[in-house]
Length: 370
Length: 84
Image (cartoon, rainbow over all chains, first blue to last red; front, side):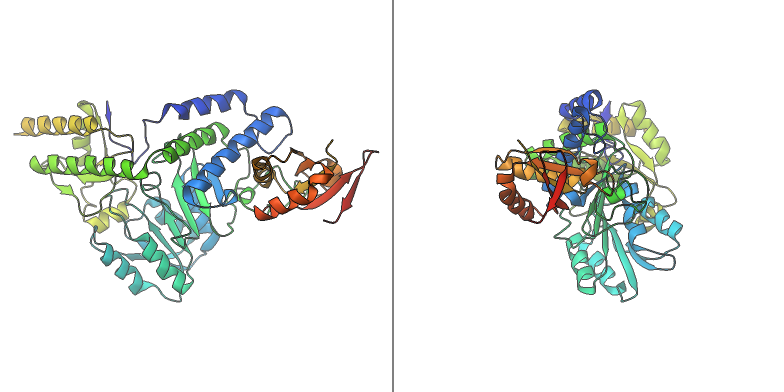
């Protein structure tokens, strides 16, 4: 199988991820609960990952909170900032993790749109709608449908000038592009652990530059006599037993990335994406592409429903994802809501052979069609 | 013999403190705080030698670790709260 569905989850991980998980499964008890050796090892394992993530993202360890995925992180962030009736400005590329959460909170979102790959257009569109009534701004870094990169640092600066809390969804960028919460003036940055960070499923991070409200209530291994949740992060939002094997694997993924040249990883991913674009264009497949695109490429197979197109690739051993990608708002903005797209997505471990194999399958499909 | 206990609110600042002290080779032990010095319930403590107390406090301050209390472990097994 050629796996090109990395925006859903990365399947190929460095071997040390599984090794760390197995070691944790065999030797780690409950972190922060007991004083025996197995509990201490669990505490150290969790803290090593916290420390690795803090170093990778330029924060302090206590600003790194573990979640089960990016969705949980976004839920915590939005519930910490937004109440019913609040006006929240979001990009027109947001995932259901943002839009459904805001709907559930009864917020009133203002959706900002611009041409997909027009960074200046996005910035100017955000600037136009921000006002003293804006309770929060939520924006993804990289679109999970089109791979366009939004000008996060500049949007963050607009928010800072107006003292508006800024929430970033870094689900598709963490591990592929630099993520710098402090530079972005972000209150919260949410991300999964199982995509670009190369950790296992069931892990995620919420990077917090302000306090957060808990989504879960319960034991934290601290201040047990007090019935209120602790005030301090990370314990405030980490009630219950942590996913220690998952966190151990995530730590291994982050440490692996930290040892690589981020510039080399980005260049490799960018070369592969451009090769996929050129190959598909040569075969006259409609592609959604533009300047600065990262990791994700939406396209269509002429004359085929997107799900049937992805199925045709799957029969040829190519793993892609079709449909709306849990982001109907992004498809509306991109003009692809009625038909959806097929999405090819890369990781830092993708190889040229993966893209060449995909293009051979595309050529075969095209020949069969004609 | 460790005879000073610094209490910390949870395992995260405990680990952070332990890393800061380990980095400069300051001997200590991170452990669950004895019940007598954790009135709010569960907490963590760094046990260290009294002679290392001031150096440890400086290092923890530099690392932004909040120490909740400082206790001398007396020979009769009891604890006495002290001011830094």
